[in-house]
Image (tube, rainbow, N blue to C red):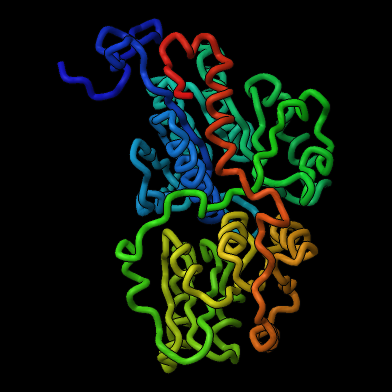
Amino acid sequence: MASLGIDILGPDGKPGPESSVAGNGRRGPRIALYSHDTQGLGHIRRNLLISGALCDGGATPTILLLSGLREASAFALPPGVDCLTLPSLGKGVDGLYFPRSLDVPMADLIAVRSKAMTAVLRSFDPDLLIVDKVPRGVFDELTPSLDMLTARGRARIVLGLREVLDEPDAVRREWDDGDYEGAIRRHYHHLWIYGDREVYDTVNEYDLPADIAAMANYTGYLNPLDLPQPLNDDLPEYMRDLPAGDGPLTACLVGGGRDGMPLAEAFLTARMPGPRVLVTGPLMPEESQVRLRGLAASCPSLRILEFVTDPCPLLARADRVIAMGGYNTVCEIMAYEKPALIVPRTQPRVEQLIRATRLAALGLIDVLRPESLTSGALSSWAATAAAPPPAARAVIDFNGMQRLPQLMREHLAANPLAQETVHVAS
């Protein structure tokens, strides 16, 4: 029978005779990345960036993404990477979750998601599982999978954290209520913190206990330019139809768009020279998009894009940027060294405000608090923004993409059971 690249497991949960392995009796590393994806595009975009770094590290892993964002299917996947999309959750600006599409009780939706992940991870049998942010998964949906993988003993399990989660008191309450420390002690081997402890010392800010702090690796911020970049001939279609006009091009990014209307409207009604491009995001409500299109209709130097999976070509072309303060957006802005004004989200978390404030203190970005957001404030900033900021790599640790492949190799090499069948490239 031709191999499909899938382990066929016997009743004991071990690979059966049809299991796909290399001719030397070893298979390549298998990595799974979980993100619950409820508020925007950040989790899936970060996991795609991490996947690109791991695939670029010489170990040729097979990577499976587990995502709760149906828009994940629109993103370009690196070779060797595929995605399982779970039935989606939504999250309101009040922080409450709800079924995004299915008309079922939340308990039923979580049960479907949880059972699907457990079945897939049992069959995929990863050597490394990287969990984004929530140690048990949203509503503990990942716990059965963690129990199964821990009992099996093959997978090294990593908790990946952006450098800022929220204000310390809120994080401590959330971690205590969810017994996250207990989950980490039972199931996890390492913590990857995607930041620079000189900018934000995650371990100390959140008072992590000594045994969990000992698991932590600060990777540095994730620089998308450390991945191979497409040639100009490979630019996305949206870049071939940018608005014309004299003066600097200003780009405005509002993340997934669910709560981006105030910034988007202020941007379109601001006075600033040169052409402008607004990316609304796929989660912005339709009524908000209709209003924005009406505002832009009479101005040929304005262009609205609803959904851009890769904003990097736009950032490379832009002369200045106005954006919300999500982790990925800020990293992309710093990578391209453009003058940038960040208008951070402050509800239901102040994560973006904390990040923006710390980076502004280093001269890498400017910050406008959301309560001060007006079209006039944006106009004033645009009239004075000129000089580019310092190179981020000269100011902060921006080498996370380069460190991740080595961390992967170290974690895989630390598991004797995985080494029975996994060949880890050096």
